[in-house]
Length: 525
Image (tube, rainbow, N blue to C red; front, side, top):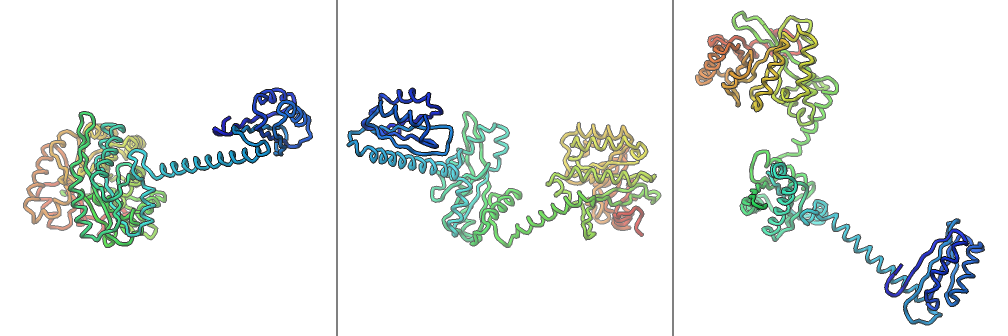
C-alpha cells in the first residue's frame, strides 16, 4: 500500500516455506537499490526464514535486510519499504525511518483532527447545529457570574403529533435560527425536545431581569414558521433565576419554567423565597409514602353513614379512601390520590378500595357506595375488575352503588352509558356525585340511567342562609323527582341545614352532623 507519495510499503504474511517463491516474485520488480526489508518471526533459524533470506539475496541483492522478532509462533511477516528519492544507499535506512516518522506525524494530526470533530459533535445539537446541553453545563461551570434563561415551545407536542416529526424537526430548526437572529448578544443553546437556553454573561437582579424578559418575550411572541403552504404559530414560555448563587441554577430555572406553564404566564423568575425545592421535596416524600402504603395495604376505606330523611335511619354507608401512614396518621384523598395518578399507581388504589369495601359488606345487609372517577370508567382494566367483582357475589352486587364524580367532565357518554348498563345488569346502582359543582349539566341526566344524585356540599353547606344556593338546590330536587331519581344532600353539618334539606324534600342526607367518616361502621354519638 502507499504510505505517502515518497515511501511505498508492502506487507506479506507467510505460514510455510512453500510461499517464499510467490512472495519474492511479487517484490522482484521493485527497486532494490532503495529498499529496506524487515523479516519478522518468532525465531530466525527456521527453514522458512533461511529460504526467504537466500531468495531475497538473489533477487534484490542490494536491499538491506533486517531480522526482527515477534510473539506469533505460526506466522512470519515480511515488510518491504521502498523510498522514491535519489539518496545514498548507505542512508537508505535513515531516510525510510524519517518518512515513517513523517507519516506517523501526519497520522497523529489526522487523529487529533478527528478527535476534535468528535468532541465538537458531542457538544453540538445535530438538528440545529447550536451548542447542546453538555456545552451549556460546561459554560455555566466555567462562568460563575452567568445568568440562564430557558425558552420552551409550548405547543410543540401538538405540532409534532398533528404534522409529524419531519415538520416538528423543521419547526425546531426554524425556532433555533429565529432565536439566534433576534438574540445576537448572547449565546443560544438547544436543549432536548422543545427547549432552548440563553446564557447571559452576567446574572441580573430581579427587576433588571424582569424588564429584560418582558422585552424579550415581546420580541419572540409572534413567531410564525412557514412550511410549504402551512403557517405554524409558535407560543413560548420563558424562565430564569435572579439568585447570584449559580449552584443548581439549571434545576431552579427548570422549576420556574414548570410553574410558569402551570399558571399560564409568559415567564417566571425563580427566587429562593418561593421554596419550590421544599414543594418538590414534599412531593417526593409523599410519592414514597403512597407507594409504601399501597405495597403494605395501608390504603383503607373509611365509612360514613347516609340516612333516610323520612325515618332518620342509616340506609347505607359511603366508602371513602384513606391512607394511614406508619405513625397512624390518616391522610385524606385530596393529598394522595393526585400523587397516585402521577406515579401510575391509581388503578391499584381503586382496586384496593373496591376489594376491601366488598369484603367489609359481604356479611352485612347494609347498602354501600364506592366513588369512581371518570378515569376509572374509561380504564378497561378497572372496568373488567369491577365486572368480575360483581359476578363473584350477586347478593353483595345488589347492595353496591358506584358514585361517579360529576366534578370531572364527561367527554365520552357512550363509555359511561356502557359502564352504567353493565353494572346495572349485575344488580348494582349508579349515582352522580358532587352534582352542582363545576361541570354540572342537567341535559346528561336525561341521557344516562342513574338512580341517585348527590348534591354537592358547596351548595348544601350554606343553604340555610344563601337564597341562591337554596334556589339551585330546589331546582335540582324538582328536576330529579320528575326523572324519578333519588337525591342525597352532602355536607349536612348542622341541625339548621338538616331542617332545610328535609323541607326541600331531599331523600337522604350525609355529613358531619349525622356521622363522621370512621374506620368502623356505626354512627358516632
